[in-house]
Image 1 (cartoon, rainbow, N blue to C red):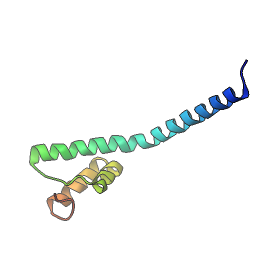
Image 2 (cartoon, helix red, strand yellow):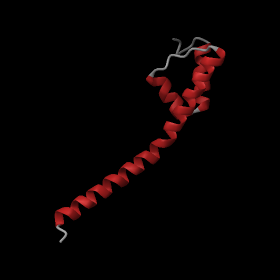
Image 3 (cartoon, one colour):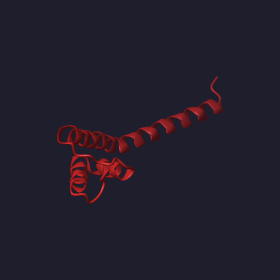
Image 4 (cartoon, rainbow, N blue to C red):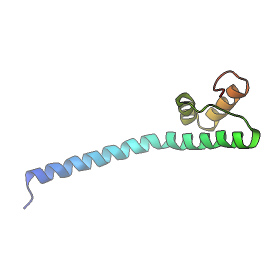
Length: 85
C-alpha cells in the first residue's frame, strides 16, 4: 500500500532531479568555455612562455568569453595592462 508520505517524497525527489538537470544544462557551456580557455592559456604558457595570473576574474572572463576571452586575457597580460603575475 502506497502512503501519502511516499508519494510526497517521490514528487520532491522528482522536482529536485529536474531542477538539478536544468541547472546543469544552464552551466554546461560556461564549464566548457572555461576548460577550453584554460587550455589555451596553458598552451600559450607552454609554447610561448606567456604567463598569466589565474584569478577568479580571469576565470570569469574565460568562462564567459571562451577562446576570445582567453585571447583578451593573454593580450592584456602581454602588454602589462592586467593579469600580470
